[in-house]
Amino acid sequence: MKKRVLIIKMSSMGDVIHTLPALTDAQQAFPHMVFDWVVEPGFAEIPRWHKAVEEVIPVSLRKWRKHPWQAFKQGEWQAFIKKLRHVTYDAVIDAQGLVKSALVTRLAKGPRFGLNRQSARESMASMLYQQKVDVVFAQHAVVRMRQIFSQALGYPYPLALPDYGIDRTRLASTTFGENTILFLHGTTWPTKHWPVSYWQQLGRLAIQAGFDVLLPWGNETERLRAEHIKDFSQSARIRVLPKLSLGEITSLISRAKGIVAVDTGLGHVCAAMAAPTVSLYGPTNPDLTGAYGPNQHHLRANFPCAPCLSRDCLQGQDFAIMPPCFETIPPEKVWHQLLNSMKEYESNQANIMG
Image (tube, rainbow, N blue to C red; front, side, top):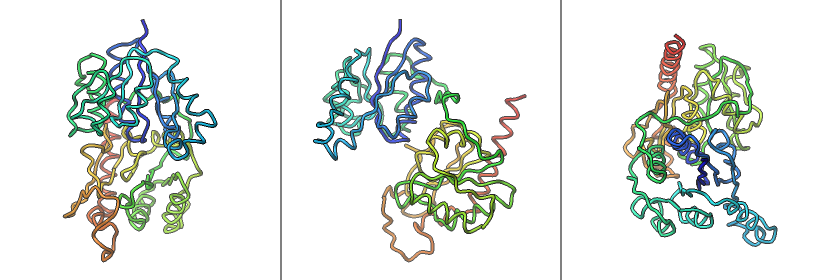
C-alpha cells in the first residue's frame, strides 16, 4: 500500500539539495513510499529531479511576507492552503526547523514531525510538532536530514554513503563541448567571492592546458563578473554562457571534466551529481554545510580569522587581495588540486568501466 509523506523544506538551494539523500534512504526502506514537497518557486525544479517525488507544492512565502495584502487579495495564500490540505498524509516532516516552516507544517493534514527544542534551528518551532526527533546539531546537514527522516519514518539509519537519487533523464539536456571546465564564481556573501584576478589567472592556466572554460551566471552582477574574467584572456576558449535554467546548468555540471566553485548553491549541485569539484572556502566552514559527496575537494583559507562566518570582512582594505584570507588559496594551488581531482576521477571511472 502506498504511503504518502509531505516534506516542508522551502529554501535555500543547498538546503533543498541536502534533503535528497534522505528520500533515497526512505524509499529503499519503504519502496511504496512517495513524497510531496513544499518549496519556494525558485527551487521547485530540484525536488522534481528525484524519482520519489510525485508533487511539488510551490509556496511564495518570501514574496507574501513582503506584500501580504496583495497575496491575500489575489487569492494566492488561499490557493496554497487548499492545495496543501487536499491530501491527508501519513507523515508531515518539517525538515527546516524554523518557526515559518513549522507554521506551514501546522497547516497540513497528517501527523507532524520535527526537531525537538534542542535540535531545531529556532527552538520555538518545536512547539508546533506532534512528534519530535532528537538530532545533534553539530553534524553535516546531509547527515542531519538522513537522521531526521530515519527517526520520523521508523527505519534504521543507513550506513551507506549518501545517494542523492537524481534521475538524470529529468534534467534539461544541454552541452557546450566535451572538454570543459566550469567556473562557478557566483555567490551571495561579498566575503565568499574569490577575487576576479584569481579567476582570470586560473582561466589562463586552464586554456594553456587545452581545456575550454565555461562561465555561467544567474544575474546581471554575475554576468559582468563573467565578462571581466573572460576579457583578461581574450581567448575564444573562455566562454560566457547565455542565461540558463538550473536544470541546464546541472546538465553541464554532469558533463564537465572539472569544476571550481566558491561556497554557493551550485556547489551542492556538483556534490549531488558526483562531479569532480574543487570548492573554495574563505569565511565559511565546510564541515557543517560544505559540498558533501563523492569527488568533492575542499580548499580552506589558512588565515588567523578564518572561518569568520561573516558577510563583511573586518580586516580593512589594506590588502592586495580582498578578502585577504583568499591569499592563502592562490590560482596555482587551485589548479594543482583540480588537476589531481580530475585525474583521480578519470581513474575511478576507468576502474568502474572495467
